[in-house]
Length: 634
Ligand SMILES: C[S@@+](CC[C@H](N)C(=O)[O-])C[C@H]1O[C@@H](n2cnc3c(N)ncnc32)[C@H](O)[C@@H]1O
Image (cartoon, rainbow, N blue to C red; front, side):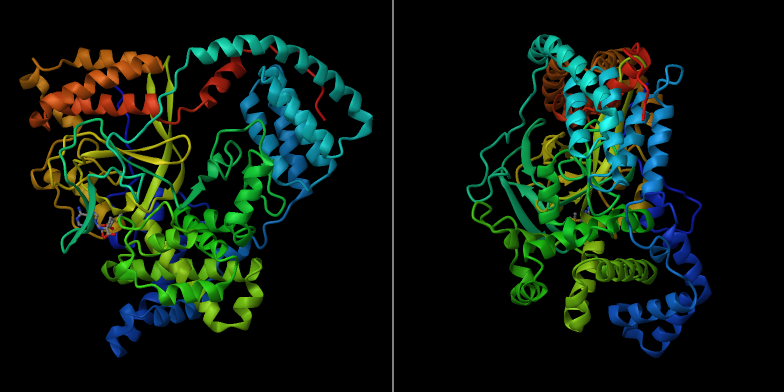
C-alpha cells in the first residue's frame, strides 16, 4: 500500500559522513560542487587549513582566515565551475533548437503535448524581446493550447505572439486560430461555470484567536528559550488534533530547477501555458508582467544573471541564500551603507518575532527577524564551515561581477565584506531553517500519492519550531505560499510544539535520522522516538496483529482508496472523522492503528488544503485528445 512520504532525503549510508554536504543528500548537482570541494580538500585545502590551525588554534573559528586559504587554493588548483558558464545571456541558437524539439513533440504519432509546452518555454527563456523566435514560440504554444482545449491560454499566446512582432507572412494563420479558439471558448464557458460549483475550496484559518500584535500566530503560542533547545515554541493551552496554530508568510522562496518551465518564479503558480521570460536572464519565467515587476523590485535585480549558476552549481540552499541576500539589499533600496547601519544598530538578542508588532512592522523589521535566525556556526565542523565559505566566495564573486552592486563593492572594501558576510550568513541560516515546498500529486487510477518538491522557502515564525522524529504538528504549504502549522497529535498545556524536519520515525530508522539531523541541523536528536526507538510504519505493519481489533489493513486501504479519488468533499469528511478518532486514541501512540490513521489524516489534509497539481490532468489529456486541426508549426 503506497503511503505518502513527508519527504525522504536521499542518503548514502556508506559515504563518509563528515564529507557529504547536504547538497549531495538533497540535491543532485549538475556540476557537483561538493565533489570538487572534496577533491580540493584532499589536494591542498585540508593540509593548508591543518597547518594554519597548528600555528593558530583560533583559525577554525576565523571566517577571514579560512576564506583566505580557500581563495588561495581555488586560484592555484581549481578553476571554479561558477566561472565556466560565464554570464547567463539569451542565445538565439538555443531558442531555435528548443522550439524545433518542441515541434517534434506535437506530431499526431508522438502526441507529447506537455513536453512540447516545456520546450517552447525553454525556447522563450532564450529569446530576446520582440524577436521572431519569441513570437514563433508563443504562436506554437497557442497551437498546443488549442489542442488541449485551453482556449483562454491559446488566445493569450496569440496576443503575446502579436506583441512580439509575429511575422506578417504568417498573420493569417494566427487570425484563423484566434477565431477557432474564441468560438470554442464561448461554448466551454458555460460548462466551466458548472464545474466550479462542484469543487468547494476550504479556506484555512487559525483555530484560536491570533495574538493582537501577531495575527498569523494563535495567541496561546509563546516563544521561550533554554539551553537544550535554544528558542522554542510552547502552548499555554491544550491543543487538539486539527488545530491550526500558525499561518506564516515566507521571507524568501525559490523554485526548483525542474519546475522553471511550469511555474511562475515569483508566485509559484502552475502556469505552463502562459509563462513569460525575464528579459535579463534565461533562468526565471513569470505568469504575468505584474509578477515579473514585483520579482525585479523585491530581489531579482540583484540576482539576475547569477541565479542560474547559483542553483545549478551550488544547489538549492545556496540559491535561496542568494535570493535572501538580494531581498535584504532590495529592502534597503540597494543602499549597502544603510543596510550596514541598520545591522550595526541591531541588538540581535533583542529581536523577537513573537513580541514584534507585525501589523506595523516595516520590511526592515521583518528582515531583522530573518537576520537573527540561527546559523549554527559554532556547532559546525571545520569541513562544513569551509564548504559554506567556499559557497559564499563563489556567490559573492558572481554577485559583484554580474550585478549593479559592482561599483559599490569595488569602491568600498567594507561594503564588499558586508555583501560576503550576508551571503555566508544566509547560506548558513537557510540550511538549518529551510522548508521544502511540495505539491500533492495523485494519480487516481494508479493510486499513487506523492509529494513532489517544487521549491524551498524560509519562514521567520515557523523557524522558531524545533524538531522531533515523532512530531506533534505538521506544516502544510498552501497554494498561496503561506505555511500552515496544524496539530497532528494532542499537545498538553505548557508543552513544546515539535515540527518534523523531514525525518520521521514512521519513515526512517533511528540511525539514519540521527546522522542526517546531525549533519544537516547540527544537533543530537533525543526526541521521544529516538529515546524509545519507535518503529517505522513498515515494522509496525508487520506486527499489527496485536492491534487487529482497532483497525485492519483493509480498513486503512479503504480510507486510502477513497482518498485516491481526489474528491475534496469526501476528503474533508474523512479528515474530520480521523481528527475525532485521533483526539480520542492518542494515548495509544505509536500503535499501528494510531500511526496509520495519522498518515491517512495527513493525506486528507493535503487533499483538502494543499496544492494539488494540475499537471497530471493535462498529461493524461495529451494522450486522450484527438487533434483538432493539426497545424503546421513554424
Ligand atoms: C529551525 S531552528 C529552530 C529554532 C532554534 N532552536 C533557534 O533557537 O533559532 C533549527 C535549529 O534548532 C536547533 N534544534 C532544533 N530541534 C532541536 C532539538 N530537538 N534539540 C536540540 N536542538 C534543536 C538546531 O540547532 C537546529 O539547527
